Length: 154
Image 1 (cartoon, rainbow, N blue to C red):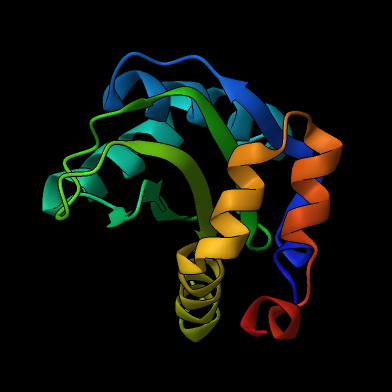
Image 2: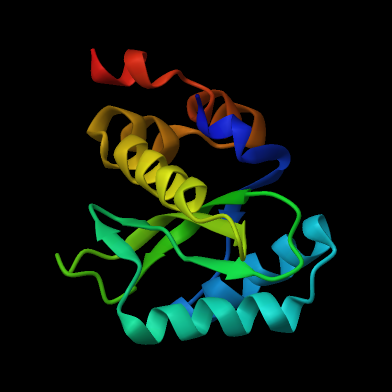
């Protein structure tokens, strides 16, 4: 299973302009609301509540904000490459420039955790992260996200 099972080509933001963590989360919430039909305010609130528990920055410039929405029909992913890295309060102190938003239906249970683990595994791969940072448009970013997990292990 690849990340393209979670992310549609329209859910790729090749150059997100944000000056801080809150602004980045607001921008991805707005795009997610457009694509899912969910409330932008509802998505934003869920993501900000999750960040209060601890940063979703996983290190090496990657953040995976995530949350569950009651009315969402299926897992939804959105990928954004930031125009310039921002502080995301990562444990490793590194600024974040790659963000993968993951939204799940409230009753997703294990599927949500499996998707989260898959996203984290792929984006922690130094080769994949480098390719994402070098890609300049949505099509190229989508192609990198479409790589099967086996090819990233080589």
